[in-house]
Length: 101
Image 1 (tube, rainbow, N blue to C red):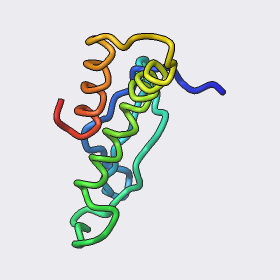
Image 2 (cartoon, rainbow, N blue to C red):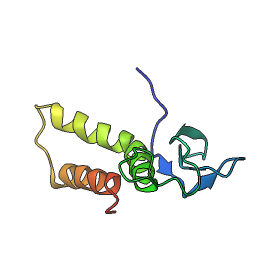
Image 3 (cartoon, rainbow, N blue to C red):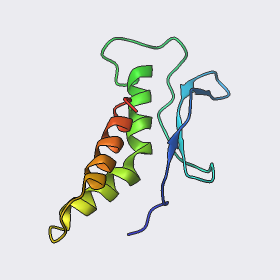
Image 4 (cartoon, rainbow, N blue to C red):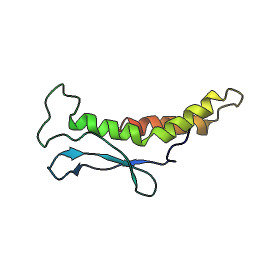
């Protein structure tokens, strides 16, 4: 299985031609590889899965997918002792995916 190599990054708010807000996820060369669903401007209904907060969280999680996968692969090898750097890479990816880094 092949996917676009990381690192990936999440954009700031973007607006489409109708003024709806979305976020995109791009590869290291700036090519868009994913996009969150658009939400109409001002459509922030409580409980809706398409709030700005959810859109931002989804984009961050998508952008960290390559780093999270790499960390999991390292941890699942099972025959290698994990180093402090391995754990730090995993912590960093999780923190960034959750908006803390």
